[in-house]
Length: 244
Image (tube, rainbow, N blue to C red; front, side, top):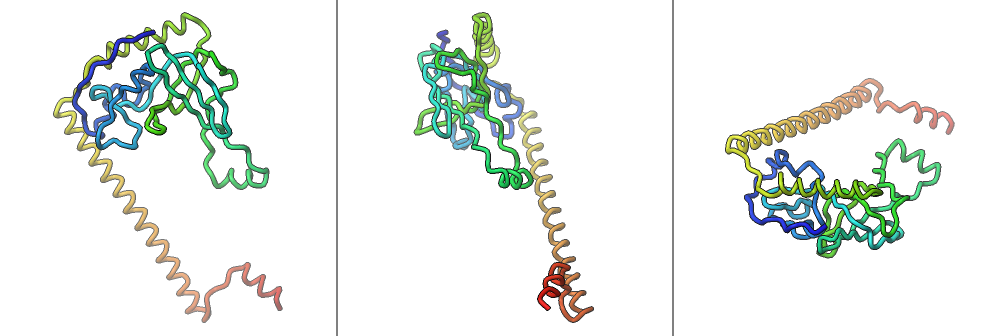
């Protein structure tokens, strides 16, 4: 489907206002050409946040045909063609190989589980797919960092996806979003409250750690005064007894 180009312009709100945007925390329905035309704004570099008008965009949904599908040692790499006049690369890391049993038992208790990659078992060259992901860049070229993928098996389902894209463009992306001065002020105050709560939690953690260390020093000092030497642990006592 050939979609009309998106309009340009719009005022950029501070980052603490982005949560109120209709695009920031949703899968924004775009074409490959749209993704390549999104704006980068000073102050948001390296955050994978891009802009259309003043809409901040992190997550996107695209629909198209996979014209290449390659499996490399550590990643899957695809090219999506949605007939928008541009194609876009879609990349997905492969899950790491399972560790040996002894290492696996150790890691289960010490490391958080790795995120589960999308299931690509049914995906093949020529599949019509709906992909969802974040926008990334490789060597200055934008790509989709895949989070979810589904095969579109029926023409009606594909047509519905294009209708959803057209509706989203008309209802959301066609005009800038706006906030009243009161809403901006309220968001700024909420941000300051969150910063104060975060600073208070950090202060309490520091005080708790300082008290714990102080109690440990006092306990060791009391043991030295009472016995004339630091108190040995049970393991040290057992080791000393085996040496006799």
